[in-house]
Amino acid sequence: MATFKDFRNKVRPNWCPGCGDFSVQAAIQRAAANVGLEPDDLAVISGIGCSGRISGYINTYGFHGIHGRVLPIAQGVKMGNRDLTVIAAGGDGDGFAIGLGHTLHAIRRNLDMTYIVMDNQVYGLTKGQTSPRSDFGFVTNSTPEGSIESTLSIMEMVLTAGASFVAQSFSSDLKELTSIIEQGIEHEGFSFINVYSPCVTYNKINTYDWFKENLVRLDEQENYDPANKIKAMKTLMENDGLVTGLIYQDKQRKSYQDLIKGYSKTSLAHSNLDLTEEKFNELLKEFV
Image 1 (cartoon, rainbow, N blue to C red):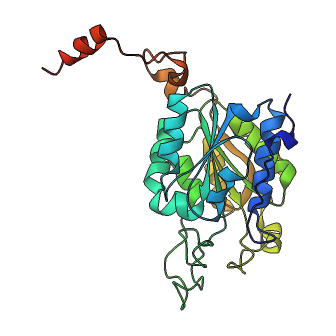
Image 2 (image 1 turned 90 degrees about the vertical axis):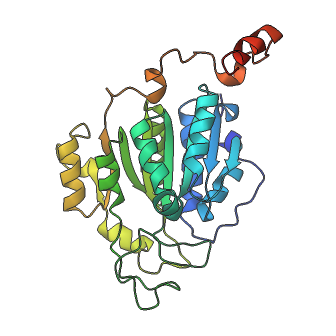
Image 3 (image 1 turned 180 degrees about the vertical axis):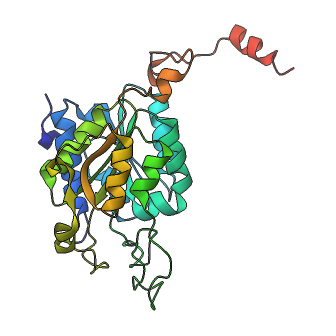
């Protein structure tokens, strides 16, 4: 049985010291081992940005995609090999700016996979520009007089879009984050996990101390029920989205794969794709 160490490789991350993404990487590795996966059972697909490097730092199948397109790639991997556990990973710029359309449609499609967003509220890799998650008034290279755009309320939006699993965590809380990722992996449907992962280089506002002062843990709230969607939305709105834990889960909704008629139980990756001359001619007649 695989352990946390089996998901390590010899590639040394080049994130800035103190970056929250280190903890996200460790949480994925721990969660994969805890749910009983082997390295060849998992595929980590990543986008562009500092967080996009994560697929190369884990000893498993990996693919580093292009900006904003992590989810189409990850969904294709899952459809091609339903036996794989697929985790898509990226940043708030990758998922909520150029990739926002893919995020929304992946949510409503509900493939059985997990999407982890490392939300640092800034574009870190390209030297600190404003992201869709930056606060109003946030000063960066691209907004020297402060951002005049409102912050995208991503958790409320994801819940409204119909996600069947919605959770949020904080990179410095490795125990909670690992548990959340485990639950996301085991959920039969699309699991959306937003992780506050502070950028220590370009975001001096939303720091580790700032989050520790402002985040509310849902597991400490009396009678909180993640099956209650109305309560989940109300809780998010009352706390400006600054909550951690399992926010909402719909265990009854079927996944995309379960709704496809005739979807083979044998993965495409393991199917016989040889095309006989007879079959080729049969297919050709459909177009001639």
